[in-house]
Length: 103
Length: 103
RNA sequence: CGACACCUCCUCGC
DNA sequence: GCGAGGAGGTGTCG
Image (cartoon, rainbow over the protein chains, first blue to last red):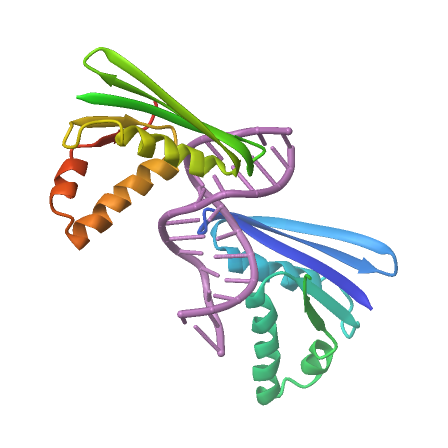
């Protein structure tokens, strides 16, 4: 189970923002980050898991941690919508993802 | 024009606090002060001008100096709210008060 | 309206 | 460097 911890922020909102993610895979920690001018808090919160998911092998068993309800329910709904549209293999991969808030 | 300089502080916040005010009326300086256990910085910042205003004649032309934005905007809003409720004479007195930050 | 984030500002301190 | 007491707003969803 690969664990991904993500966060995003944005000075001023809208303003200059950044995101970061820590990918923990079998005791190996990978840190990625990025920044963007004139963006929003939710765009940054969302970009973090998106960038992280692109770094891991397809079909991996993944758990994502975010403090953003926007991201959490957002991804949940996307899966729900894509499920209707039947994205086939992509769905099967995404269904392995577990989203958690930070408690 | 009566000038009132106020300040409040609080050790620990919340903690034990105090307030002070200097009332300058026609070259006469009056100093008042007080203290309170288990209070907050903003309560003390606010108590200072309240106590001072009770010491001066009603209808006086007053200028208050505070370093607290909480107090400054707080009083401004009170005047605005009381204005809606139509406090009549009280409003006319209060409208003479000028609030200044310390620059 | 509610929830979760993201801040901005001013004070008070430790 | 850290936190608390306060008021003001936006980004997004249901």
